[in-house]
Amino acid sequence: MKQIPIKQIASDKQYVDLYAKREHIHVRAYKGFYRSLRILAAWPLLLAYFLTPFITWGGRQAIWFDLPQRQFHVFGLTFWPQDFALLSGVLILAAFLLFFVTVFAGRVWCGYSCPQTVFTYVFMRAERFAEGNRNARIKLNTQPMSFTKLRKKALKHVLWLAISSATALAFVGYFTPIRELVSLIVSFDLGVWETWWLGFFLVATYVNAGWMREQVCIYMCPYARFQGVMFDSNTLIVTYDKARGEPRGKSARKAEVAAPTNSNDTTEALGDCVDCGVCVTVCPVGIDIRDGLQYECISCAACVDSCNDVMTRLNKPTGLIRYATENVIKGATHRVVRSRFIGYAVAVMLIAGLLAFQLVNREPLEVSLTRDRQALYNDMGSGVIENTYYLKISNKGQEEVLASISISGVRNYSYLSLQKISLGANEISEAVVRVQVHIDNLDTPNTAITFSVKSNANDDFEITQESRFIAPADQLF
Image (cartoon, rainbow, N blue to C red; front, side, top):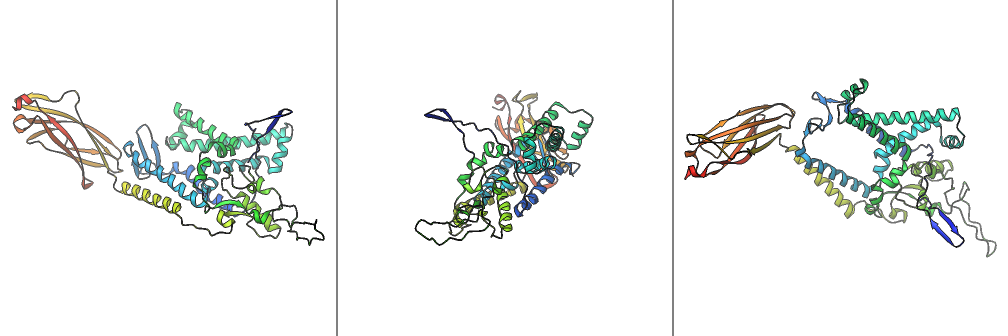
C-alpha cells in the first residue's frame, strides 16, 4: 500500500493529504514459469483480436456488428434486437464464470487475460525496447533533455501510438468491415463516426496502457473493489510465507541460532527472505506482497517468478512467495470443493445449458403482424368487408427461405396478397395483406383470425400470429 503523506501545519497539528502524487513504476524484466504462462495466454488473445476481423465467413466478415441494420453476425449465426435475451444470458454467464474462477484462484483473470494487463505488458515491452532496462530508464528520466533522451522518448511514444492505432483499427473493424475501413483510411474518405471512434479508442489505449497503467487496476477497475467478498480461506492467492521468510536479512544463508553465553545474548536466526526487493520491482502495480494480500494485487505471479529465481541462486527452496491458500499457509487442509465453489459451478452449468438450448431451438424466422390503424374495416359494397394487415417476416438464417402464408378462423375469405414470399439470408420482407370476407360468412363483428407462416426449409417449423377481423355490427344483425 502507498503511504498517505502527513504534513505538519503547526507545532501541534497535522493534516492528511488525501491526494498522493503518482510515482512512476519502472517494472523490472524477469523470467519464470508464470511469465511464460502469461505470454502463452496473451498471444492467442492478441492474435484473435487483431486477425478475426479479416476472417471471411459466407461472403461477409465472420464477426461483424452491423449497427445500422441492427444485425450482429457471429460466424454462421445472425442475431437481431429480438435476441437481446441471448446477449443478456452471455453476459450473465461471463459474470458467473468470473466469480467461479475467482473463488477458486483469485484474480488470475486480471493477471493473465484481462485486456488492460495484456496491453500494459505490450506497452512495457515497447518501452523497454526504446529506453532500455529498468535502471537505464530510471537514469534516463533523471537526466536533462538531450538528443539521446529525446530520440529514445520519441521512439517509445511512436511505438505506443502505433500499437494504439492498430488496436483502434481492429476494434472499429468489428463494426465497420475492416477491409472497407482500411480502404476509407487510405483514400482519406472516412466518415464522421468512423473518425471519432478511431480517435477515441486510439487515445483510450494510449492513455490506459501507456500513461495510467496500474492506476486503471487500482482506482478504475470495480473488480478490484468487490473481489474480496468472493475470497475465502481456500482461495488460491499469491502470498508470502511469513513464517519462513521472517525476520528478513541481507545474509545469503540462514544464520544459525547462536548458543547464548549469558542471559542477555538473544541472537536470532534470519529467515529465508534476503530483503532484496526484487518482488517489488517486478510488480506492475508497485506493491510489496510481503505486507500481505492487498486489493491492488492482480495475481500475475511476477513476484513468485522473481523470488524463485533468487532462492534458486542462493540454493534455497523455492516457494517463499507462491500461490497458496490461507489454510495452507496456516498448516490446515486445502478444501477445493466447498459450498460457494459448488454453487457457482452449478450456476455456470445451468446458464450455459440454457443458452445452448436457446441457440439450438432458435427460430429461423421472425414474424410480426399489425392491423391497419387508420381504419377498422373497409366496406367494399355488396356485403363484402375488407380488413388490412401489415405482415413483417425476418429471415434470421444464412440460407434463402420460401415462406408460405395461410389463414384460419374465417370462412370463404379472399386473400389479396402473395401467399409465398422468398427471403434471402438475413433479409426482411414487409407485405400489405388484405383479407375480404362476405358478411354472410361472419358470425360476430369481431372474429379471431390466425396467420400461419411456414418455412420450406423445415416443414415442421410454423409461426402463428393472431389478430381480429372487424365487421360492422349493424350489417350482421
